[in-house]
Length: 159
Image (cartoon, rainbow, N blue to C red; front, side):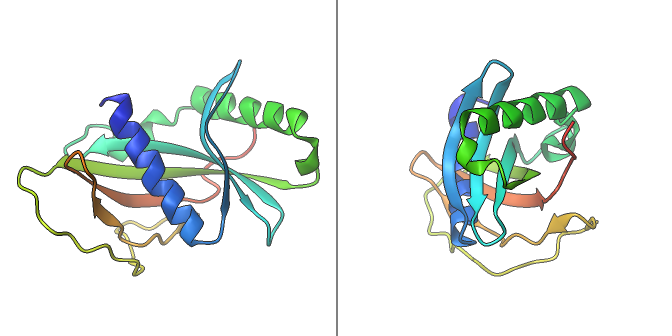
């Protein structure tokens, strides 16, 4: 996967989070511990949401990217979140949440009109910490179709 496709997945997740009334504070926030794909704010619950987005082709080998969220990766994200809070003291009283968004993509060979649906759906094998994202399908200018296939809220705890 190229960085460009990963960026498209992050953009799609950001759009969906904004449709849920979250504010996007940062994309690809970098620090010495690594990168946080999306940092969002839920003002209604005073929560900072650190989102790891995994964008994979439909015929992937690692459970749509879920297997790539290793303990080491979780620790890096957690350390990055702590550093973000240290640098942004206005959020010191906020709760922190660590979410994971799984996005599939495929190349669309022939241009066609696709419907963007904001309806909720129930994914197979639902987990307790899983919120039900809309089935978002969109065709982007470069010919990729991206779908949010899973969004895990509170996917892991602070390390």
